[in-house]
Image (cartoon, rainbow, N blue to C red; front, top):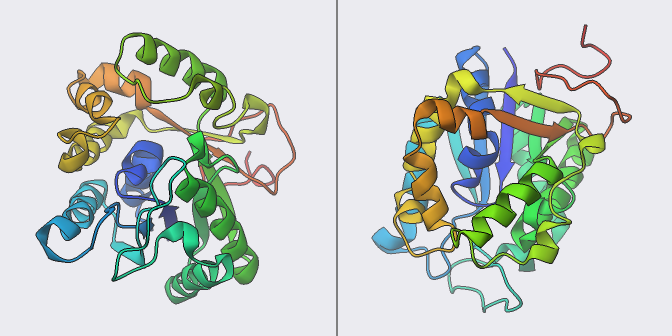
Length: 267
Protein backbone atom coordinates (compact mmCIF):
# COMPACT_ATOMS: atom_id res chain seq x y z
CA UNK A 1 0.00 0.00 0.00
CA UNK A 2 1.33 3.41 -0.99
CA UNK A 3 0.58 6.80 0.55
CA UNK A 4 -0.29 9.57 -1.88
CA UNK A 5 -0.63 13.22 -0.90
CA UNK A 6 -2.49 15.47 -3.32
CA UNK A 7 -1.58 19.13 -2.75
CA UNK A 8 -4.15 21.60 -4.04
CA UNK A 9 -4.73 25.33 -3.90
CA UNK A 10 -8.41 25.51 -2.90
CA UNK A 11 -11.38 23.29 -2.08
CA UNK A 12 -12.96 21.95 -5.33
CA UNK A 13 -9.59 21.82 -7.17
CA UNK A 14 -9.10 18.29 -5.84
CA UNK A 15 -12.32 17.10 -7.51
CA UNK A 16 -11.80 18.83 -10.83
CA UNK A 17 -8.15 17.98 -11.45
CA UNK A 18 -7.55 14.72 -9.57
CA UNK A 19 -10.88 13.43 -8.24
CA UNK A 20 -10.98 10.31 -10.37
CA UNK A 21 -7.33 9.48 -9.71
CA UNK A 22 -7.82 9.85 -5.95
CA UNK A 23 -10.92 7.65 -6.04
CA UNK A 24 -9.08 5.03 -8.10
CA UNK A 25 -6.09 5.01 -5.75
CA UNK A 26 -8.35 4.71 -2.70
CA UNK A 27 -10.30 1.86 -4.32
CA UNK A 28 -7.01 0.07 -4.96
CA UNK A 29 -6.27 0.17 -1.22
CA UNK A 30 -3.80 3.04 -1.05
CA UNK A 31 -3.85 5.77 1.60
CA UNK A 32 -4.88 9.06 0.05
CA UNK A 33 -4.45 12.47 1.68
CA UNK A 34 -5.61 15.85 0.39
CA UNK A 35 -3.88 19.02 1.56
CA UNK A 36 -5.13 22.44 0.51
CA UNK A 37 -3.06 25.58 0.87
CA UNK A 38 -6.09 27.88 1.12
CA UNK A 39 -9.54 27.58 2.66
CA UNK A 40 -11.08 29.33 -0.35
CA UNK A 41 -12.53 32.13 1.80
CA UNK A 42 -11.66 35.75 1.01
CA UNK A 43 -12.79 37.06 4.44
CA UNK A 44 -12.23 35.87 7.99
CA UNK A 45 -12.17 32.11 8.49
CA UNK A 46 -14.21 32.20 11.70
CA UNK A 47 -17.85 31.18 12.00
CA UNK A 48 -20.07 29.02 9.85
CA UNK A 49 -19.32 30.92 6.64
CA UNK A 50 -15.60 30.58 7.15
CA UNK A 51 -15.80 26.81 7.59
CA UNK A 52 -18.23 26.12 4.75
CA UNK A 53 -15.63 25.55 2.02
CA UNK A 54 -13.57 23.23 4.24
CA UNK A 55 -16.68 21.31 5.27
CA UNK A 56 -17.51 20.87 1.58
CA UNK A 57 -13.98 19.66 0.97
CA UNK A 58 -14.34 17.02 3.69
CA UNK A 59 -17.64 15.87 2.19
CA UNK A 60 -16.09 15.62 -1.27
CA UNK A 61 -13.06 13.79 0.13
CA UNK A 62 -15.30 11.24 1.85
CA UNK A 63 -16.98 10.50 -1.48
CA UNK A 64 -13.58 9.91 -3.09
CA UNK A 65 -12.31 7.67 -0.28
CA UNK A 66 -9.70 10.14 0.96
CA UNK A 67 -8.33 9.18 4.37
CA UNK A 68 -7.30 12.62 5.63
CA UNK A 69 -7.89 16.27 4.76
CA UNK A 70 -5.45 18.99 5.85
CA UNK A 71 -5.66 22.78 5.51
CA UNK A 72 -2.18 24.32 5.64
CA UNK A 73 -3.66 27.43 7.24
CA UNK A 74 -3.62 30.09 4.52
CA UNK A 75 -6.24 32.38 3.03
CA UNK A 76 -7.24 32.54 -0.62
CA UNK A 77 -5.23 35.17 -2.52
CA UNK A 78 -7.91 35.79 -5.15
CA UNK A 79 -7.46 35.86 -8.91
CA UNK A 80 -6.85 39.22 -10.50
CA UNK A 81 -4.56 42.24 -10.34
CA UNK A 82 -5.52 43.23 -6.76
CA UNK A 83 -4.13 41.33 -3.79
CA UNK A 84 -6.35 42.31 -0.86
CA UNK A 85 -5.04 42.78 2.70
CA UNK A 86 -4.66 39.68 4.83
CA UNK A 87 -7.59 38.65 7.02
CA UNK A 88 -6.82 39.19 10.71
CA UNK A 89 -6.53 35.47 11.47
CA UNK A 90 -4.29 34.14 8.67
CA UNK A 91 -2.05 35.30 5.78
CA UNK A 92 -2.98 35.08 2.16
CA UNK A 93 -1.06 32.27 0.48
CA UNK A 94 0.59 34.61 -2.03
CA UNK A 95 2.28 36.54 0.81
CA UNK A 96 3.72 33.52 2.61
CA UNK A 97 7.47 32.97 2.03
CA UNK A 98 7.99 29.96 -0.22
CA UNK A 99 10.40 28.25 2.15
CA UNK A 100 7.94 28.54 5.06
CA UNK A 101 5.06 26.99 3.12
CA UNK A 102 7.33 24.31 1.64
CA UNK A 103 8.56 23.27 5.07
CA UNK A 104 4.98 23.03 6.32
CA UNK A 105 4.12 20.73 3.42
CA UNK A 106 7.35 18.78 3.88
CA UNK A 107 6.49 18.18 7.54
CA UNK A 108 3.18 16.67 6.47
CA UNK A 109 4.90 14.47 3.87
CA UNK A 110 7.35 13.22 6.49
CA UNK A 111 4.60 12.64 9.05
CA UNK A 112 2.64 10.53 6.58
CA UNK A 113 5.71 8.79 5.10
CA UNK A 114 4.24 9.68 1.71
CA UNK A 115 5.42 7.90 -1.43
CA UNK A 116 4.03 10.29 -4.03
CA UNK A 117 3.14 13.98 -4.12
CA UNK A 118 0.60 15.29 -6.61
CA UNK A 119 1.07 18.98 -7.36
CA UNK A 120 0.44 21.40 -10.29
CA UNK A 121 2.13 22.22 -13.56
CA UNK A 122 4.42 25.26 -13.88
CA UNK A 123 1.63 27.42 -15.31
CA UNK A 124 -0.59 26.69 -12.34
CA UNK A 125 -3.17 25.56 -14.87
CA UNK A 126 -4.80 28.79 -15.96
CA UNK A 127 -2.37 31.02 -14.04
CA UNK A 128 -4.14 31.68 -10.72
CA UNK A 129 -1.47 33.03 -8.36
CA UNK A 130 -2.30 30.40 -5.74
CA UNK A 131 -2.03 27.60 -8.32
CA UNK A 132 1.34 28.84 -9.57
CA UNK A 133 2.53 28.94 -5.98
CA UNK A 134 1.31 25.37 -5.38
CA UNK A 135 3.65 24.31 -8.18
CA UNK A 136 6.59 26.12 -6.56
CA UNK A 137 5.84 24.88 -3.06
CA UNK A 138 5.33 21.32 -4.29
CA UNK A 139 8.67 21.37 -6.08
CA UNK A 140 10.46 22.77 -3.01
CA UNK A 141 8.84 20.25 -0.67
CA UNK A 142 9.86 17.46 -3.03
CA UNK A 143 13.46 18.67 -2.86
CA UNK A 144 13.32 18.79 0.94
CA UNK A 145 11.96 15.25 1.26
CA UNK A 146 13.20 13.48 -1.86
CA UNK A 147 9.65 12.41 -2.71
CA UNK A 148 8.56 11.69 -6.25
CA UNK A 149 6.18 14.32 -7.63
CA UNK A 150 3.66 14.35 -10.47
CA UNK A 151 2.11 17.61 -11.63
CA UNK A 152 -1.62 17.68 -12.41
CA UNK A 153 -2.43 19.43 -15.66
CA UNK A 154 -4.65 19.32 -18.75
CA UNK A 155 -3.71 19.03 -22.43
CA UNK A 156 -3.71 22.58 -23.73
CA UNK A 157 -5.16 22.26 -27.24
CA UNK A 158 -8.51 20.58 -26.45
CA UNK A 159 -8.94 22.78 -23.37
CA UNK A 160 -8.43 25.91 -25.46
CA UNK A 161 -11.08 24.70 -27.90
CA UNK A 162 -13.53 23.80 -25.12
CA UNK A 163 -13.10 27.08 -23.22
CA UNK A 164 -13.40 29.07 -26.43
CA UNK A 165 -16.74 27.40 -27.13
CA UNK A 166 -17.90 27.96 -23.53
CA UNK A 167 -16.90 31.60 -23.75
CA UNK A 168 -18.91 32.07 -26.96
CA UNK A 169 -21.91 30.42 -25.30
CA UNK A 170 -21.53 32.81 -22.35
CA UNK A 171 -20.99 29.91 -19.94
CA UNK A 172 -17.57 31.31 -19.01
CA UNK A 173 -17.21 35.01 -19.63
CA UNK A 174 -14.39 36.21 -17.39
CA UNK A 175 -11.47 34.20 -18.74
CA UNK A 176 -8.92 36.02 -20.88
CA UNK A 177 -8.54 34.22 -24.26
CA UNK A 178 -4.86 35.16 -24.39
CA UNK A 179 -4.27 33.53 -21.00
CA UNK A 180 -6.18 30.43 -22.05
CA UNK A 181 -3.93 29.96 -25.08
CA UNK A 182 -0.87 29.60 -22.84
CA UNK A 183 -2.58 27.71 -20.00
CA UNK A 184 -1.91 24.15 -18.84
CA UNK A 185 0.57 22.01 -20.80
CA UNK A 186 1.44 20.85 -24.28
CA UNK A 187 0.91 17.20 -25.19
CA UNK A 188 4.68 16.72 -25.42
CA UNK A 189 5.10 17.53 -21.72
CA UNK A 190 2.43 15.13 -20.44
CA UNK A 191 3.63 11.72 -19.24
CA UNK A 192 0.50 10.23 -17.60
CA UNK A 193 -3.09 9.98 -18.82
CA UNK A 194 -5.13 8.19 -16.17
CA UNK A 195 -8.38 6.53 -17.19
CA UNK A 196 -10.88 7.26 -14.40
CA UNK A 197 -14.15 6.71 -16.27
CA UNK A 198 -15.09 3.92 -13.83
CA UNK A 199 -15.03 6.54 -11.09
CA UNK A 200 -17.07 9.18 -12.92
CA UNK A 201 -19.98 8.88 -10.48
CA UNK A 202 -17.69 9.55 -7.52
CA UNK A 203 -15.96 12.43 -9.26
CA UNK A 204 -19.29 14.04 -10.19
CA UNK A 205 -20.61 13.57 -6.64
CA UNK A 206 -17.42 15.06 -5.19
CA UNK A 207 -17.79 18.09 -7.42
CA UNK A 208 -21.44 18.44 -6.41
CA UNK A 209 -20.39 18.42 -2.73
CA UNK A 210 -18.86 21.87 -3.25
CA UNK A 211 -22.28 23.47 -3.04
CA UNK A 212 -21.08 27.02 -2.43
CA UNK A 213 -19.21 26.90 -5.74
CA UNK A 214 -21.92 25.11 -7.68
CA UNK A 215 -24.80 27.31 -6.49
CA UNK A 216 -22.91 30.50 -5.72
CA UNK A 217 -22.19 33.53 -7.87
CA UNK A 218 -18.59 32.73 -8.79
CA UNK A 219 -17.39 32.95 -12.35
CA UNK A 220 -17.38 29.16 -12.79
CA UNK A 221 -20.70 28.45 -11.01
CA UNK A 222 -22.71 28.00 -14.20
CA UNK A 223 -20.11 25.62 -15.63
CA UNK A 224 -20.14 23.62 -12.38
CA UNK A 225 -23.94 23.33 -12.46
CA UNK A 226 -23.87 22.13 -16.05
CA UNK A 227 -21.19 19.54 -15.27
CA UNK A 228 -22.98 17.93 -12.32
CA UNK A 229 -26.22 17.72 -14.33
CA UNK A 230 -24.64 15.91 -17.25
CA UNK A 231 -25.65 12.27 -17.79
CA UNK A 232 -22.94 10.08 -16.35
CA UNK A 233 -21.70 8.72 -19.73
CA UNK A 234 -21.29 12.29 -21.02
CA UNK A 235 -19.59 13.40 -17.80
CA UNK A 236 -17.21 10.47 -18.15
CA UNK A 237 -16.51 11.35 -21.76
CA UNK A 238 -15.54 14.91 -20.78
CA UNK A 239 -13.84 14.35 -17.42
CA UNK A 240 -13.03 10.65 -17.42
CA UNK A 241 -9.30 11.11 -17.94
CA UNK A 242 -6.82 12.98 -15.78
CA UNK A 243 -3.41 14.20 -16.81
CA UNK A 244 -0.01 14.54 -15.14
CA UNK A 245 3.56 15.53 -15.88
CA UNK A 246 6.54 13.71 -14.40
CA UNK A 247 9.12 16.53 -14.24
CA UNK A 248 11.91 13.99 -13.77
CA UNK A 249 11.06 12.09 -16.95
CA UNK A 250 12.28 12.70 -20.47
CA UNK A 251 9.68 13.53 -23.14
CA UNK A 252 7.95 10.40 -24.34
CA UNK A 253 5.34 9.39 -26.86
CA UNK A 254 3.93 6.84 -24.41
CA UNK A 255 1.30 7.95 -21.88
CA UNK A 256 1.23 5.95 -18.66
CA UNK A 257 -2.07 5.08 -17.00
CA UNK A 258 -0.88 4.46 -13.44
CA UNK A 259 0.52 7.33 -11.36
CA UNK A 260 2.42 4.88 -9.16
CA UNK A 261 4.45 3.71 -12.14
CA UNK A 262 7.28 5.67 -13.72
CA UNK A 263 8.39 5.48 -17.34
CA UNK A 264 11.30 3.36 -16.14
CA UNK A 265 9.08 0.75 -14.45
CA UNK A 266 6.12 0.66 -16.83
CA UNK A 267 5.93 -2.56 -18.87
